[in-house]
Length: 150
Picture 1 (cartoon, rainbow, N blue to C red):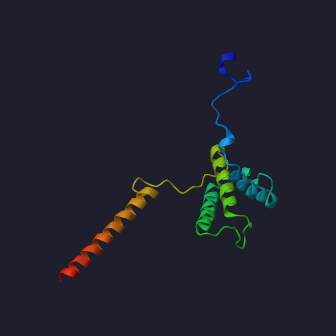
Picture 2: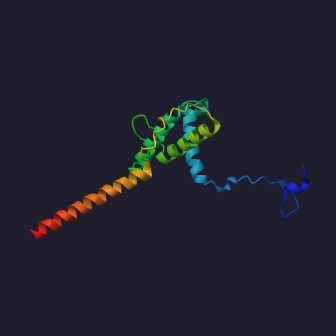
Picture 3: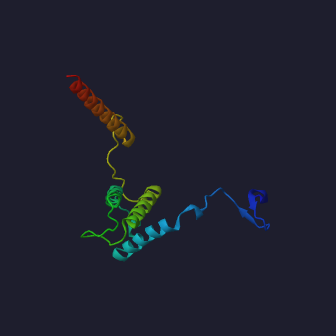
């Protein structure tokens, strides 16, 4: 290796700098939340059990359930088969497991089939909803206008 390819610290120490992002960007609280749920899973099943490979759709569905509960102001996973942990812990662990599974190619990619070009995505759905609400508003305004003119 060429010495010129190394970065030099203020102290003069050399280090190969490959443009790798620093992990200091990761919020420790978020990692701690994920770690708590992963540790719970290790106690319940086995250390790093998820690395044996889980169906991706199962992880997606779990994420959606925890996000939905959290969005509805239910802070803890305290249902009949719940962990008792905060939903944010379960969300973070689910996101870590899913993203790692996808990147590593482990588990089963059993996501729903790809939709055709005519199927709406979230942004198209939002636009369609707004168009319908505008239509309803115009209809209501015209009805009121016709009523007051009578």
